[in-house]
Length: 82
Image (cartoon, rainbow, N blue to C red; front, side, top):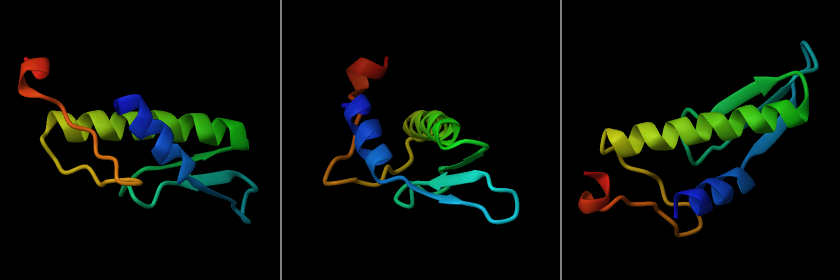
């Protein structure tokens, strides 16, 4: 379920080329604070995926709300977390 959520969230990523230095900026608007910046689009995608994974694990660990994406919200059962 987590990997499916991550893949779905990455499909919502939006990228742009920054005018000042030509680097790539990517973000997932549904996931507040998930963004990345890198010299190439591929590196930006890789960095964004890492940031998203860290963001998701942090929110799960701290019992914070996770926004649904395409109707999907990951959850962790207590017996699995122990």
